[in-house]
Length: 301
Picture 1 (spheres, rainbow, N blue to C red):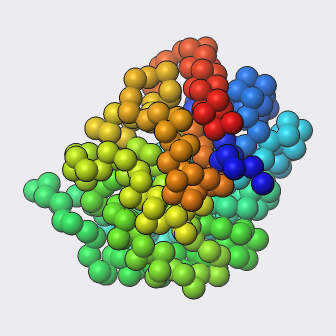
Picture 2 (cartoon, rainbow, N blue to C red):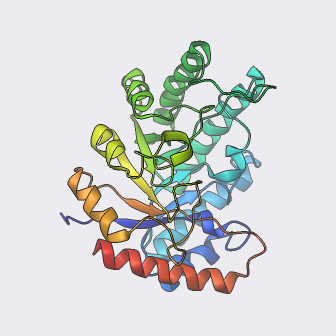
Picture 3 (cartoon, rainbow, N blue to C red):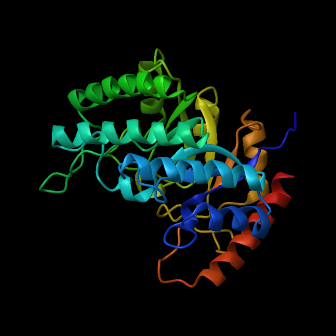
């Protein structure tokens, strides 16, 4: 087995541009020279009518097969992320979010995608804007119950793994290493295993974690037994930028690969996850993506 991390790309860059498989598959394979992706549910809403969801699932599976692309996993994307999901203050919205994920599992299974994940939810902000150090026990316990229930539903769908992605927000869970460890322990009995997908721009958010958090090493070292995928982005550690590697930032691809090897994560797939303003022209994005993937491929070769 190769000692280098498998390198892929999250289809976040395709939103409102290369929105169908006959568009994104040749971009990934022919323009970027990649054969590993993480699908984004910004491209398919699993709550569409069932026949429409199934047709898109078949199209995704066929395009991946035709172009020699492996779809490692599917992540929830930005659109669903905005709705507070499993921690919305309205319990009916939480129930809907659980149903949304169940439908997402069905789409993934039909599309030949074995893993689904993303951030799970956010509590509402207080009127005075003050934020507690963590969500309360009732919210947390309810979310764990839903995660275990979702594990059962994912098993029925035929999935092999579910992901939670830690985010650098006090209103979400988990946002610290200790919280992530607690969550993984609390869902260890899930019918479908839960793992972590960690993001380079999340654990290094200095305004939240302080100046000592200028590296992902603490996250990788402490949680390497439950991390099975990684998002990489260029960022300045001041916000969760999701820049590509044509931008100036603090993430060096060569150092990134060495860090993953040093923390015993050399086999975990690494996905470039970048977002662009909708008004930016698509040609300049393609050029930036080509340069970025080339830089990453050279570092991870």
